[in-house]
Image (tube, rainbow, N blue to C red; front, side, top):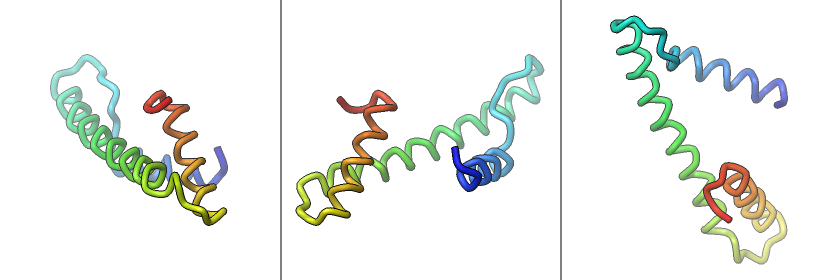
Length: 82
């Protein structure tokens, strides 16, 4: 990860809060709510990547096709597409 990626990751984690359960009901209820928020964020981000992959897969412009191929590679690494 680049420094910028780590910074963004850390900011998102701080904004959402902890997602790991600790075995205490009140804390775990809060971390579960945070987990749901994190899950929705991940689904939205993956959806954005998927739309780049799908919408531009047949584009003839090099830079657009390159973005679509990279988006598809990300989805493949996540095990979402083949």
